[in-house]
Length: 250
Ligand code: PEP
Image (cartoon, rainbow, N blue to C red; front, side):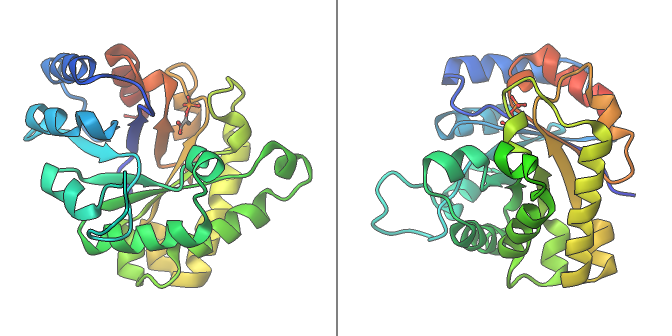
């Protein structure tokens, strides 16, 4: 009943020429049905990609957003600006932004509220560090991050959010969580959503796994009861890789 969602996070990779090339090749291949497909691309490539992806099964995503509509925030991009381009999804609170750009639970929450109020759908990242994993604090960390990110939303708004559970120690490292462990933590996150927003919201919200997902391991994750897709960095950078990931989720 929950449509799986595969989102490629291109991070700071691809020029406009490279992104355009990718999108032309992708739209020329036969689209796989039954899986929502999103490309989260660098800001500079979004306009060009919107022109190619409009009217196709591929949705466009950004990798960050500011919470204000406009203002003296040098270097930032507002939800209005993303909406104007035709962006549908936005990644909020990726661990790289939490680690390198001072993203906090509070700014994540403000961004989630701002995104939804402009009709952008947040992909909210939560996940524990290696030290937190090793000390057995995974559940406590994801609960705090999830509750903070969704604070103040209505249960109808929560249904529109996608959560990406991404253990930090698994991102870009080649070390992935086992499908069973990821499912257990994602089930726990769903339980947190249920306690705060009710059973209907918990049954509707999509929760992805992210962290070294590849074409050869994605099926194991998607077979799990609570995993609704994947947020994928490295393996989403080639058209072949992206298509194989989607095929693995279908
Ligand atoms: C990510 O960027 O969110 C990610 C999970 O990266 P990778 O798939 O490369 O580990």
